[in-house]
Image (tube, rainbow, N blue to C red; front, side, top):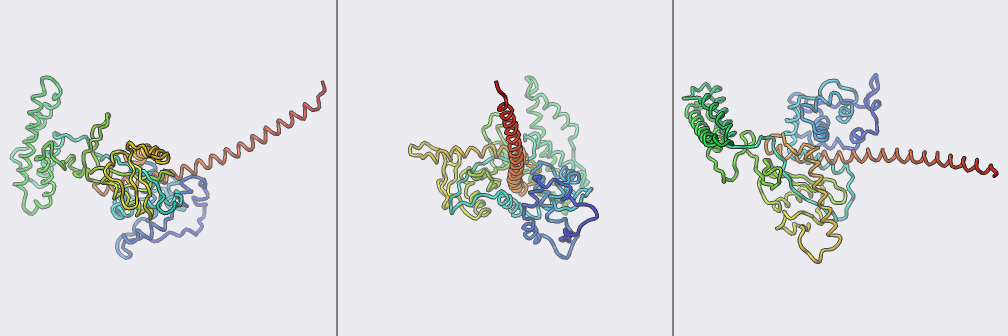
Length: 450
């Protein structure tokens, strides 16, 4: 249910937040730059008008999503910082200081699931508008595209880890349903785990291999025992988990679509060939920027392990959906070889060409600017490790990170403009002062006679 709107025109007994804050602060300026009514008009369809508890204001929840990625905070830390930061509260639409947290952290999870991928794309679209992109002519936009991997919040997967987790899950199911297992193997698993500690030593490698095989056998025995003794009316609730465990036990080294995590079964393995990190576990993400401004004009996630050239159609479709036009040229790296054109967009990958023009060579060089942008997305805007659940969390995390970087870009420009203004004022006063000193010195020397 939608909550009632708070009166904003009514004056309080004391001064409001707008009178206490620096009105040239980037967050203060951004609060007036964003069209909040756009989110309220588009998101109110997700709420009931008559039934249920009144929800939190839509502006508050959208502002919290933006602040979370702009400041690189978790949901728990975000609500704590909100109760302490006056600029956060003013950005969220508050007129007076609120000493309490704005919501429970889990309400942010529910709000993300409520608006879905379509809602966060609307936030990205608004972040593009806030940056005032130049009005290009029809089909004159030149963009750069590259892919990266947003890693999921899982440990480095090994077979032994998965087998031991299956054993613990079977113990939990047995305790919950009151099943008397034929044998729990508690002490045996503990002893086998001790033997596996010496798998890299000269004399313990053979025993460690045998211990690993024994752990897999025990996991299969417990899984079959649980499946046999579960009551029929309770089997349906545990059937998806049991099927997942059986799939892990039956998978081989060379299989496709392997399971690397029990709580994130959709995670894929990407062999990037990096020296410091051979494999990355997560999902593939594609980023599209405007070469002229550096604004992120598109960001999309892929859960399949597909070739980079296969990602371009969806990336360009999202660009057209967000910006209302198609790019003229798309500059990519050699990983995109295989596609030369999509609709009216020409795909340009670097290749030996004697007839390449100077403008094209310059645009190929500009394509490298997307690499540090991806680096900043990972280090500063929560793309390095994705904590959001499932495929929907993957799709939303990349879009929110791109929107946050666009908002931060606009805030940085405001800050540099203010610094430039102060430097110009300081330069004016210094020039005036030195001109005054020079005039006085010249006047004093004119009266001297030698």
